[in-house]
Length: 227
Image: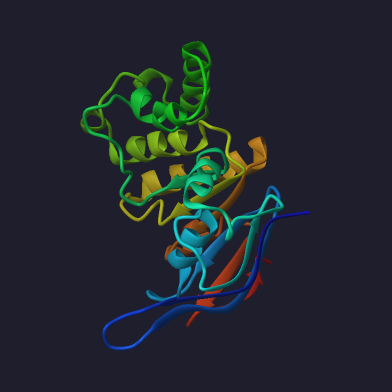
């Protein structure tokens, strides 16, 4: 059963010179519990597709359905509420708040939900345990390695138990050892916790962890399953 259904999506950006169309009549699906990797040259439309899946941007034409819900027609406020409960996003740059501890950074998405203190604490503890950082809960980002900071970012992405995890170059700022550990963690979230993950990467070793690789070039895609 598909969690993600993108049908006939085109995205065009206006510019002073000429319109830019990073995605053109694109069809794309992701099954529940699947780990899909998006690969392709810079400017091919990979991150644009992630932004459409996250409801950060809207398509010029076409349909985006997540968990059976058509999100392209939602109002800005409804879309923001939907994103809070449905999407977990992992960034290349971690995007942690430097003055907050690991636990406080993980808590940020929960502040947008109607949860009491005990429920928030339970979810934070569960998320940090899932990424192996229980003993770093009270450390600030500057007291953590790059790999640990990315694990905090992953805990933040999963703490609200979203329908869909999205990761944009999650190993791009990590050395090989930390990158391998990060990919093992993402793979485990899919295999053991049943998460659905769509990841953008240029790293062939990272892509090997996915169930399916989808190559994007000039706004169009061709799926290439792993052997």
